Image (cartoon, rainbow, N blue to C red; front, side, top):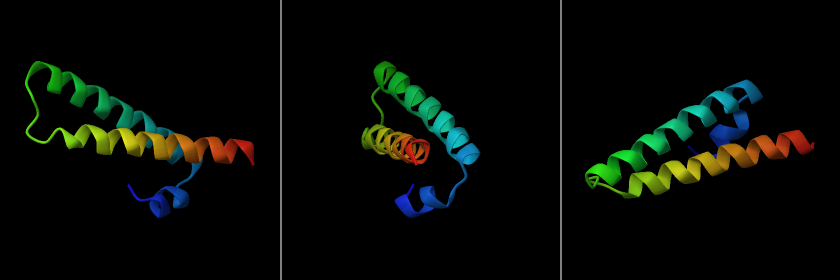
Amino acid sequence: MKKQEIKKMSVEELNEKLAEFKKQHTDLKTAHFVTPLENPLQIRKVRRTVARLATELTNRENQ
């Protein structure tokens, strides 16, 4: 997800997406542990998206 897309979301949507991407990250890590993924860079992409979402939530809480 792009930073611009994240800024347009409401807090509820951010929380939903954060939970969704955290679950996806866990699933990818587990699948990669069992059998190597065809594209292991997916894990990095999802992890960074989780970080972007969490950062935006933190910024909104501090404002």
